[in-house]
Length: 118
Image (cartoon, rainbow, N blue to C red):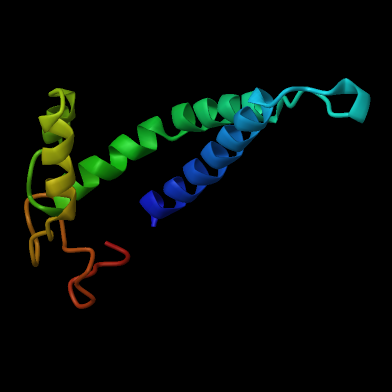
């Protein structure tokens, strides 16, 4: 859900900025009352600020996924390898986690193994 929410926000802000910047490339006719659209730049700034705001939570979600698979969170550093690292991370994020307990805790998808208050 975290990834879905982020992608929706990125698509909305990215779409608004691209559409505004395309409209800005059209000739501006001040006689018709069209003003210089700053919406594209504002959306780009908002997109950058949002990206910075969710950087740490995004890394935490990836580390949590690795822990669900009983792997070390340091596997996230594979993303630093150009081209191949992102593909490897994508494959790891799509793999199913381990069933039952592992060294990082209980299976979050196991309804019978959840210890709510412990």
